[in-house]
Amino acid sequence: MQVYLGLDHKYQTFNGWSFDTGAIGYLNPDREYYSQLWGNVNKKITFSPQTKLTFFTGFNYAIDRPDTINEVILSSRSSSVFIGSSAQWKRLSLSANYNFEGLLPNSLESRLVLNLKFAMSDRLSLSGYYTPINQNTSRSLYGANASLRLGKEYNSPSLSLGWSNTEYRFNNGFTQSDNVFTMVLRVVQPSNP
Image (tube, rainbow, N blue to C red; front, top):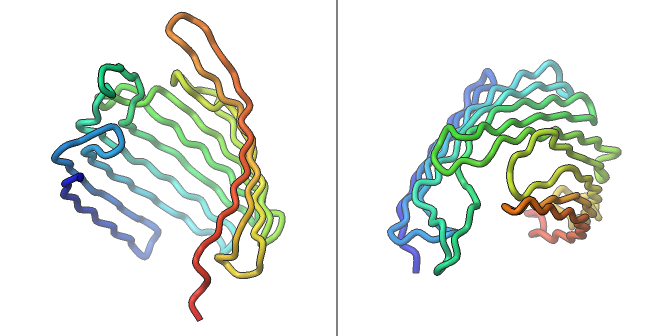
């Protein structure tokens, strides 16, 4: 049983600013459930209903996430400080997100992710990403995804096909690269009458 206490607050203005902050504390933290502080700030600039530009920044501070499972020492990191932007023009969207390393204890390594998405229709979209900077020991360098909504309703089931190239770097200098293929069928609650 996990005992925790948390709170969060969201605020949005009429001129495109949104703020999100929160905290959660666990009495007995483990690798999955641990105390955190987080905050995000977004600024959306709307030029037209189909043209938007968004700037965002935020942080997630993992306060007491353990480094071990039983006697095994893990080097996975959890804290992050990031900045980014996204642009949408009609059916095309582009985004860039940079994570700074070392600003918080147990921070993720430096990482820059570039995303491109094209909605071919209201039901079919194609997307891809590339990470030209990624200093993490386990990292996905690039990948692509196709998503198809199987009905006309907003929350109709959807099928997603994905591919990613993942690289693992070990302390002894050995590197392993894998191509990972996924197929996900999402089924959600039907819409309210």
